[in-house]
Structure formats: structure tokens, C-alpha cells
Length: 226
Length: 119
Image 1: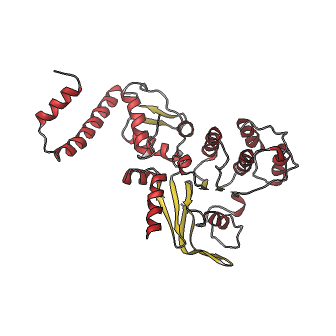
Image 2: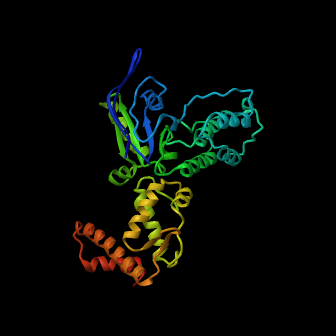
Image 3: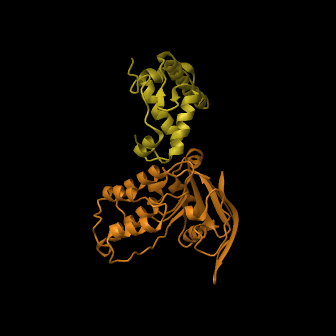
């Protein structure tokens, strides 16, 4: 079942990002969104999250069921983690405080810690924790991995699998493809402003015997030479 | 289990469970991990595990209980039959490949003998 099937054209005041690009997203899949710097990964997520004024037609998901994690979110630094979580619990009907506290513990973060005392990686974890603590239908996660250490990556993937069911769709934009490729069923590859390819990750592995990361490198090198 | 990112995860997982059953590591009628647990252990997409379970179920190697989840086939006989079919299928594929090298059966059996350390 498709939740999105659309053709997008979008531009910022002085930059064309997408021109007549077809995009199709199926329900219940985990997508990896990949592409080179500045190709429009974050923009695509912002469009899907309806932060940019663009009317995507969503099926099976309503706007309140989108959980979006921007790549550069900054919280009020004087707040404590627990206050922030309680704030979300009070203001978001689908926020699960239990889920958040459970994983906060796994990440070994102290709820009483002030946000300004957190390291970059810990702040990233907090963003991510809040994004996944919402019980949504469409999760849009923008570059979750920089600054996060390897063991925390693992918890991070567990969280996604724990959240996953057949009605939920995840789109994860990242450069660290190898961290995520086992988890993803499809990858959306932004080639240029006119093409977004949607490929099954297992098909890449079995037809060309390359990991998604190696495949991506091959393809993008070719695009550059063209 | 170590997953090779250059090969189909689906095939690797199916073989992994298959070999556990063939080798007796997973006993007849023993319970398999739930789809979610398996996905968490191996850190792979739950849909892939589901597809693997479905294919193994179609082959009769495992069965699905409506509430308790998936179990290994109770019949040793079915497992052995499945194992032989699997092995002969794989060998067939390999022999087709070898045919391209223009090699005789005698030569192949000789190499196999050597590999097994026979004199």
C-alpha cells in the first residue's frame, strides 16, 4: 500500500531542488534516503514532514501521525532531560514517556542532567529518543548518526525494530549507509534534481553482489563522470 | 551469525536457519525466535525475517502456530527429505557451473576425494 505517490517540483528562492521527480513510498517499509551533499535529502524530508509549504498527498497517514527529527535541532539548554520529556508528554498525545525513559536508561543518560551539559552525541540521542517515543505512522529521521558511538548505534537500531510494525514507515537520511543497510528494505537514491531511484536493498545485493554502500559509490562516481 | 553485506540477506538468513535445522542444532518441534526478536538479534529488517519464515514454512521445514509463533517441523523424516533436496539442488547448480570447464565426472570425484583426504 502506498502512502505517498506523487511528482514533486520544488525550489527555494534561488535554487531548484526537484523538478518533476516521481516519488513513491510504501507502507510498512524502512527506507534509507541517500545521496550526495546538497542533493536534497533534508529538503525531501522537510517536504514530507510538511514543514515546507508543499502539499503532499498522504494516504493512510494523517499529518499528526508524522514524527520528524531534523538534523540540527537545539533544545532549551537550561531544561533538564526529564523536564523536556514531560513537556513532550504533556503536549503530544501520542508521546510515550515510558518508552522514552526505558531507552534513556539504556543509553545511560541521567534524566536529571541539564541539556546544556550534554555532549553533541548525547544531544543527538535525545533528539532521536524523542522522535521515536512518539507513536507515529511515518518517521522521518534526518542524519541520526554523526557524533553517536558504535554501541549506541546498536540501541538505536533496536529502537527502530521495536517500534516497527506493518503500519509504520521509516525514512532515514544518512551518509553512514553501512550502519543501516541491514535494516532497510529499500533505498531511495537521489541521483540529481530529476531522478530519485527506489531500489530494493536485497535486490542490489543479489544482482550485483555489492553492499548498498559500495553500490552507491559506484553509481555516484558514474553520475559525476557523465 | 555474521551477515555479509555483499550478498542477499534473505538468502543468508534462510540458509542460516536451514543449516541449524539440518545439523540438529535446532531440534524438531523446538520454537523459533519471534520475528521481532530475531530482527533485534540480527539487526535486520523484520520484513526480511517474515519472508524467510514464510518461505521455510512453504517448504514444510517450519510451521506456524496461530498464537505461539513458529516451530521447527516435528518430523525428522521431512527434515531429512528437505535436506537432501536442498543439497542436490545446490550441487546441481554447481555442476552446471562446472560443465562450463569441460570436466569429467571422474575428475570431479577425484578432486572431491582429495579434498576429503582420501588416497
